[in-house]
Image 1 (cartoon, protein in one colour):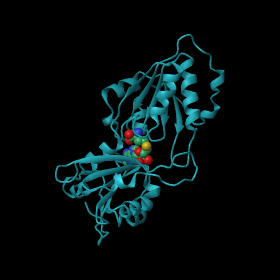
Image 2 (image 1 turned 180 degrees about the horizontal axis):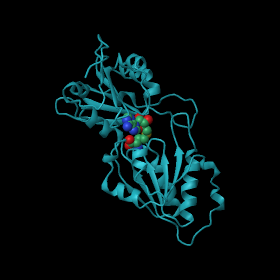
Image 3 (image 1 turned 45 degrees about the vertical axis):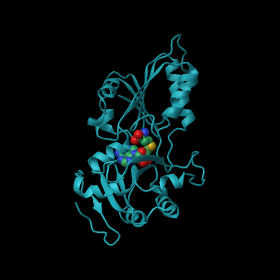
Image 4 (image 1 turned 90 degrees about the vertical axis):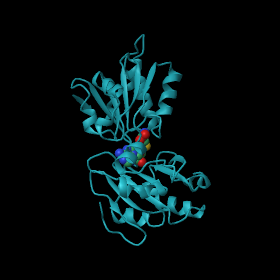
Length: 283
Ligand code: SAH
């Protein structure tokens, strides 16, 4: 199996342009557990010739790709971009124009915070045929695996997904979210890519009217064998996450549905639960 660790060695300009471009399939790899791939995604991987994959895609998902296929890691991890988004798009377009079918494999669902929409736009503008195979997004994987239903008639009748990632690659800028919307009671708010900004996020939610006692959790590496859930409140979660050394990939879940974790959580690894008063580890 060809694995290219330094994709910049790839000279896109030198690829021959075929009369008919290859089809690109944007595939959602799901949140981690390879059994959460759709049947369609698994088939696309088994039939793949070239796979461009993100850092979040696990080895057990990549194991479905045939040995003779070319696998190219295009990275993307907070602060460690193997390739810029522009370069990823250029590589994908160049490979497709050379006439070969390309699988673009992305964590979770391609159209949820993965910039899959921008990649699809580039393909459409370039006149390259493409398909999108949806994946289970991290929020759904985390909800099921951590025992936190995202909606529940007694807790939340709306659900908001937001990103805590600052726009622009590596440029410092303020986190500009719709705080009044995110701070609404009676809803569940899930924040992707927010761990680095957790103290700011929690402070802003309280500043915009959310009770500091609102249950909140960090779900790390959801659906993987080393999944961990850290439970507290909007007030306590930043310190708990820091004390327990929380690391990406992780989601922040805010809302009273988090209380259901105690009864419904059946996580592979013991969860860390803490109320405002206690930081004891528990199941
Ligand atoms: N398209 C992806 C999200 C890409 S953004 C999806 O639909 O899931 C990357 C962010 O997703 C990470 O920073 C993290 O916030 C979240 N994420 C992805 N996989 C995760 C996992 N297994 N556990 C927790 N969060 C995860």
